[in-house]
Length: 293
Image 1 (cartoon, rainbow, N blue to C red):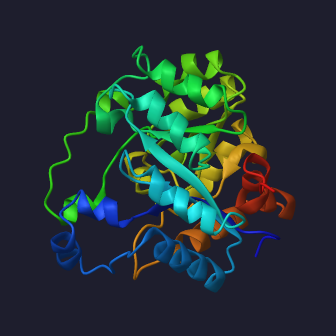
Image 2 (cartoon, rainbow, N blue to C red):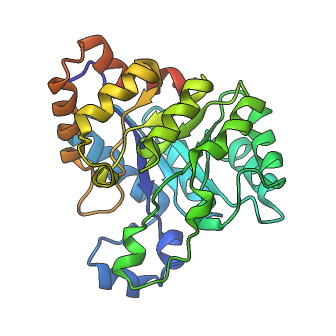
């Protein structure tokens, strides 16, 4: 085990989240546990983290407008949970809502999903939202690139009218250069656009990767393995800008330990040092999101 284990990518599937998908009917179809109140779900997550010896985790409000749920969770467990929230810049109130999520709810990362909400990062409506982060030091911006598949929507038979034209990490280059003091996080190593994500991170020292999920996108690259992904990311980006994550989301499954074990094995295979492993699995998260007094 690393000296400290933190998870930079967990979804906070709250009661408002399920309400947007059909409420109790959706839960029955999925055979998942009802989340209860935000405090209840926060307690459940912290108990789960304790069971797996995970010190801290980022929890993501997984629909726009649900920042309040994650804010309640963070207030309940401020030393254990770091709040992320989803923003749709195409909405007229996006910048105001983002400012409220940070100032009122204490959240620390806004999450952009260009393919989901069908906009380009070059769209003029994106800049006012990023301005909110830039004006609040300590705030990061998470940008989902590459393949986007929302498992819960698939299981419920709901359409996912996403547009992959807006998924290329190259689109992040100009905005990351414009805001050099804003940390940008690209999850899943770019989720299929690995080469492009590496290029952007090489050119922009404020771009980081999270390592989360099964990384099934590797199947699009013949001969690529998780071990070689880590080797290349370490060679280009360096150990200081990789954040371990699992993409855990619902109960009763809970925290996905298999993802940790697979990534630990990949780092073993390439002979990563204890120092490198400590940075990826915990230290980088703590430096990016120090515990607030």
